[in-house]
Image 1 (cartoon, chains in turn brown, purple):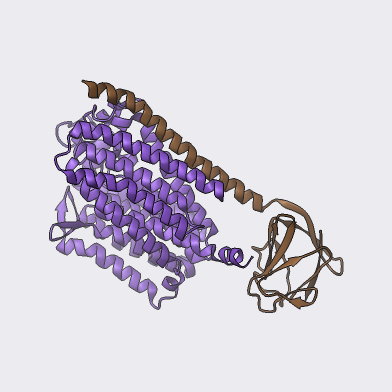
Image 2 (spheres, each protein chain N blue to C red; image 1 turned 180 degrees about the horizontal axis):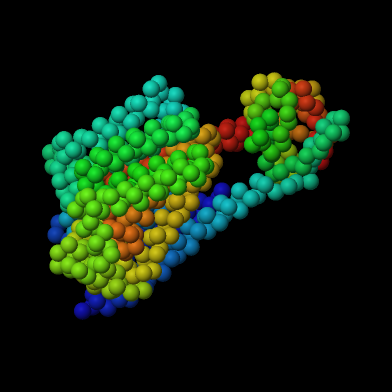
Length: 134
Length: 414
């Protein structure tokens, strides 16, 4: 008898808890989608060819390479399919070489792993020279 | 990232409180006979917390949602199993523990999934394994519940088809990665027909549907050719009509689906009881221990969803379906982010097989499609199904981890 009453009341509590759980699960999904969009946000920084041919806008995370999948596609036989990646951390930008064949150079110095880049730095990928403008 | 884990922990706390309330009620209702039951029950929340903590520690960039969602699903399954058949509870908890262990092992192993791709004569090995596993039940198998798809070893029952599912998906992914000509697709179609033949001999319609539908889906995903897909669906309809006239057990299922009231005490007993249970539940359910889900046959495995409908109501049942949707979403996301074509195809195959299985059994018990006997992953009672569902998600987690390895390197150097 008491059990029946308890079960009747607690079933609403259980349903409430189940939906609270679902709310949290969907909140994680939402944060996840927002995070993915965040990577695609355009920043004020730009990357342009030294000869002034073209200028690219940089995202929060930008990949550079010969492959079509990259954000910045450079058609040159000396550039690897996925050559380098530029990320924004706070207000600074960092470039990372993705084990490319011909390497990535910042102001003529070959970088190992990750390097910070500043305004007007010249980035060399294979035979292509790009200027970083903040 | 911080907020991510915080929300996850809150969700785990909800899982814990659902557990406490439901099992307090059930302990009063069932009056457990020995202390064993209580000890094992108490071990479950400890187990999921350890697993959650380990996952956060070992795979900081892994699919933590898989752990949160599977703990919820397995817990709902445990509650319902303890409600309808208390004797199976301990076994189920042991299977869950083994499942979580295999989840971690398969996560670690499938990080190196490209080895599976590079294996020489891989396709031949995988398909031979699949056929050997499926054929083994034809020769040594035992018939339970109308389908001959079980093997017994000293009283332990295993379903080899559950393992064959995963190997078959690896085969499909490897095959479709390189061969997409019409000729190759026809050969693949013939192989699939041979596998369907085995299932027809075993009278295992649910698995036959799962294998066929996954093959058609993967062909569509890898070739994006609508013609193949249309032919696949056309052949499926044709095969369904032919087997309706050829096989007695197919005819029974379809007739029970079209008109469940024709033979209530006999052929359509299962589905009618299931529909009564769902109707009795209403929106909020009858409350734990207040319904009569024990009237449904095989309620602990195939019909567990109807039991949940009865005691947790429509709202509880919808919550379960939504959780499956989130798992599906995560799985497809893993496939989209996979690093190469092979990984993407394996992930797509695994998650489509998983989702199709959920659709087949939930659709079956609510009489949306003809009923076939497959289990509801993570919720139903059953060792093979539980363990292999965990391996499926573990492999997806491994594929997701592989693509994120570069990021980890970046973090550590920075």
